[in-house]
Image (tube, rainbow, N blue to C red; front, side, top):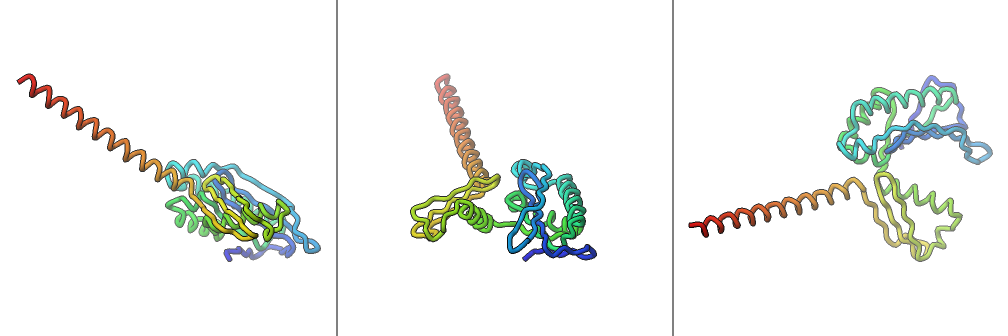
Amino acid sequence: SFVNKRKNVKENKNIAAVITIGSESVNMKVASLSLGEIKLVDTLSYPLNLGHEVFVTKKISFESLKEISKVLDGFMRIMNEYGITQYKAVATSVFREATNREFVIDQLKIRNDINIEVFGLDRAKSLIFNEIIRRSGIDESSLANTLISYLGTGSIALSVYKKGMEAADRCLSILNEVDEELAVISQKTEDLLTKEMASHDSGNTERKAETH
């Protein structure tokens, strides 16, 4: 799903690209298929600190939107050179946590003719954990009493494996957890100030009564 198909480009069927919009950069990887083996051909990265912006404002600003669009235009030109007609564009936690993500996605569709797929926590966890297991060289069916975890820019995930199967898992959004913690701290601070003010008023009342 969400595979973008480009027209009016001299097609090279053995090459494809994946664009990732992350918290700290916009990236593109180009890979080719040769004799049944996938080989990385090119990697491009443009630094763009969207994570801090979304963490503070809960939104992707219009200036950042224009910057993303400009980067995607550059990636398109490079895809033209490779003859890439099919590619996938995905966004991670930075879009997932932005309250205006639908507007941004719509604007990128209008400006760049790109469909952006936003990965949910479970989808991201599944892909990352599968890659961790693959790179470790361990057969998943042999995993026993094993904990796998990762800390991302916007999320934390844990999985416990027993007898080759996932027995328990947990995905947490860092931004949501911080928001909840700040809400608790704010409430405790407000309660403490209320008690101190009540105590201060009570002390003043007692002193006034003593003077009379």
